[in-house]
Figure 1: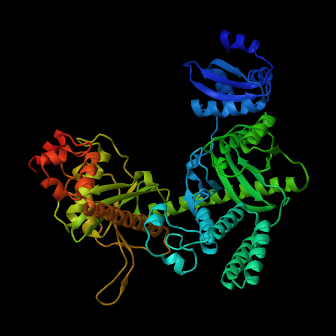
Figure 2: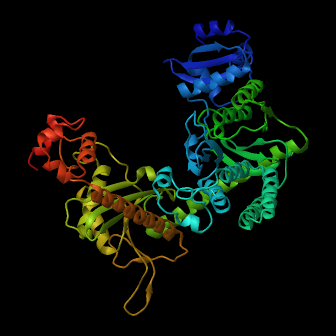
Figure 3: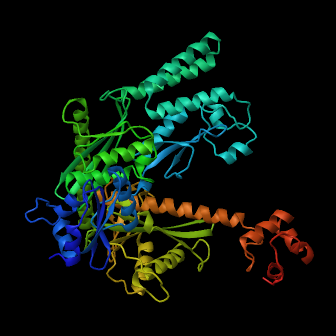
Length: 618
C-alpha cells in the first residue's frame, strides 16, 4: 500500500525528461532510473496488472517510503545525471558493471621527446597521452605490447633509465630500440615509428600498410637497405595480424557491438570491438542474480562501460554502438556519447543486414563465454570433489591455504601463507610473516612461529585485533615432520577440526627409484601417492608452487630493505624527511653522527629534537 506522500507525488509528476530516485522508509536510495517522460515511466511501476516482471518491483512497492524526481532539459542530461547519481548512492536494486580496474590498457604519451608504450590499469582524467584498449585480459594486453616491442622500434625503458643510462642496453643490440638514451636518434624517424604504433593499435591496418610500403620504397631508393628491411618486417607483422581478423563490418566504420545471453538470473554480456571492419578483440562480463529486463541490462552496461573511469572511457569511442535491444532514453545515451567523443555516435539495434549479423555474432560470443565459464565451474567442482574424497576431508575444500618458509643462509627468514579460492589464487588473503623468535636456519621453529601466528588469527586468540577466516584445507610444504609441527601449532590453539595435510615433493631414493608427490595425512604413517595427472595434485601443487614463489619474493624484498638501510633508520624520533635532509647534506650516516650540533641544526628541517634523538644512546 502506497503512502499518502508517494501517492500525492505520483499524481503531480511532470511529463518531462529526468531521473527518479526510489527511497525506502529509512530514506536510503534503493533504485535510480531515467525517463523520457517521468510521469509515464514512474507511474508504470505502480499500475495494477503491470507486465513488469522484474524481481525487485514487488519488493520495491513494499519497502518504498518516498520518491524524488529531478527534471532535466533533455534525455542526454538525464543519462549523464543517472550515471552520477548511481555512483553517489550505490542503490542496491541497480546492477553495476565490474570495477574498471580489472581492465588493462596501453598508454602512449606522444608529448614525450621519445615516447614509449606501457601497460596501465587506470588513467587520470586530463592525461594527454593516448590510450589503447581496454583489453579483456592481462595476457591480451601484454600480447599486443609484445608485438609492438618486437616489430616497432620504441624504447621500453623507464624515464629514469632513459636519463641515467651511459651505454645502450640489450634492446639496441637485438635491433628493437634505436637507443635514444645515449645515441643521436633522428626524431622525425622516431615520430614515424610512434605514428605506426598508433595506427597498428587502432586497427587501421590498411592505412598503416600503405605508409610502410611508401617508406620502404623511399628507403630503398636512397640505398638505406637497413631501414627498408625494418619496414619490410613491419609490413609482414601487420599482414600476419590481418590474416587472423576476418572482415565482418564496414571498413570505414568503427563499432562496439554488444551481445547478451541469459539463463534465468545469470547474464553474460559480450562486447565485440570492430575496427575498420575487422574484429580486433572481445570482452565478456558476467552478472548474477539479475532479473532486470534486457533493455535495462544493456542500459546499465552502456552507462558503466563508457562512464568516467570505466573501461570504454579509455580508448577512442566508436562511430556506432550496436545493441541487441534499445534501452529507454537511447537518444539521450547517444547524445551523451557524442558529447564525450566530440563527434556523432550512433546507438542502434539493427534488424537486418550486416549490422544485425554483427549483433548475432556478439550474442554467440556471449553464449560461448557463458558455456565456457559454466564448464570451468563444473570442472573445478569435480576436481574439488575428487580432492575431498582422496584426502577424506569433511567439507569441499573451496578455500585452500599453503605455507612456505624461505631464508637465505639463515638470514631474512620469512613465512608466506597463500590462499586459493575454487582453485584460483586469492591474493587478498596472502600473508607474510617475518620470523623473529628462532635462530636462522631452524625451519621447524620458523614454521611453528608462523603457523602459531596465523592460527591465532583464525582462533581469535588473545591480542588479536582482527579474526582471519580459517580455510577448508591447510597445506604444509613438506612431509611428516612439517605436518607434525603444523598439527601441534593448531592443537595448541584448540583447532582440532582444522584439516591439515603435508605435501612432499617428488624425489629419488638412494636406490634410484622415483617417489612421486605424496600427501601425508594426520595419524597415517605412509603418504598417499598422487599421480601427476591427478586432480588432487593439481590443486595442491598449485598452492605449494604459489607459496614457494611468494615466500621467495617476500624474502628478497626483506633482504633488499635490510641491505639498503642506513645507520639512521633505527633512530627513534628521526622522521624520513629529516633523515633524507641529513644524508643529502652530509653524504653518510657516519658523517651525520660525527657532525657538531651546530652543523646539524644548520640543515633545513632539522630541530633540536632531532639532534637529541641522534645523541641518545642506542
